[in-house]
Length: 330
Length: 208
Image (cartoon, rainbow over all chains, first blue to last red; front, side, top):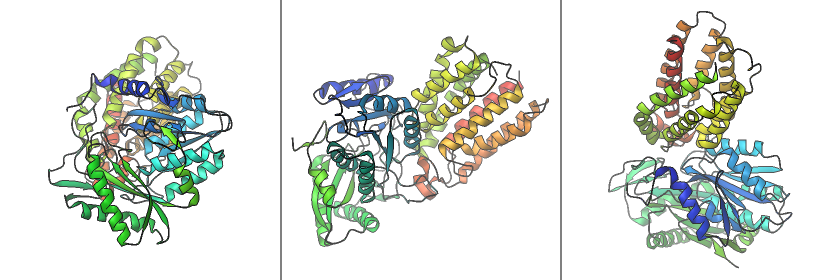
């Protein structure tokens, strides 16, 4: 393992402390319990949005704390759900009286810890669960689909509604609509290495890819030989379109997300391939996001997310945002 | 059950888990994301380190401190589930009186019931509950018996059988559920760590 690391026990604390110093104009980092919050207090009457999850997906979620997005984020250890005391402390710190909406990715550990955090928090609160990964089957009898990159879009769009006086109920409703309108699938060329493990999470041949990989390096649909980008992108889009079934006149946001180890050059190539394929199917792309936003440590690979947008979603996508990782309009 | 019993069990379990850590790590990498063993090891280390602060406390207070440490120090599913287990045990009535075998069984049974509710998982879903629920049912049969040591041998056997039975299961809960058929053929790492914990504690009770 080759990583910038001093000792494993301090890995997260040192990284969070650096994050806090690098973005001291936007956020504060609290340790023990760990949470990232906005530098400025949540204004009275604004619903607070809190997300969180295992670390290793940076900039998600701490990088999305700031005006127009989250009020706080609770980072767990690498790839491990955060603990209930973090959510409780973050909620107590940011809630201005309008209530707290927890945004949780669909993993058993995250669900359980956020539930306990919500039970321990005495103020008004509610939660939404993201599950946009079309690589795995959805079923009421199982844990269901994984929450992955579309969580970034949910946080941006609901963040804007909260900033514009949306109530807790309205924020929850919009978040659920964005989640339902989004589909994601990813591909990995290499594994990632969890610092505590010191070795790659999975073995993969030089000429292989994991199709439908999860953001913790969990296996996906199948292991295949690597193919031309157009073929890979075509297969990913097929799985997403099967699931989302967008109408021809519908507007869409196309989000190409890097897993951490793939250069932007390749991500833009993926974006171009995806645009061409969607165009050939008569599907409109009106908004775009390309970059490393929901990563899996140093994994090489990418995910594609398509979000069907109505006018309200488009308005809240375009509205100003000022966070460590997403900034526009102000 | 006493505070010194809890501390000595935590130490023994820590030793056994450390000895088997490589195996559990590999199991989790096959069907999960590899964090389970680190979470369990971190939790055990934190609990063992509590020794000085809990050794002179009443049982309910010590269990509560363990629960809070586990809940805030581990993370992941294990933190929430084992935190719930200790929190429920700490809430048992009459902990200021002597906690005999019968009472200890009742505490463990209610702890496992709370874990089942928190995780919304039942037997047959390829999780640690595949081991813990049958163990809790056996303890329920055993709790009033004066000659319980032979019964504990059965508990050990049940835990091992149920742990092995997760190998051919499809996972419907937890991280392995995303794998479908590909989760088959691997023992669930949470079932393995739970079985090791039960094995260690039962053997130590039998031999004392």
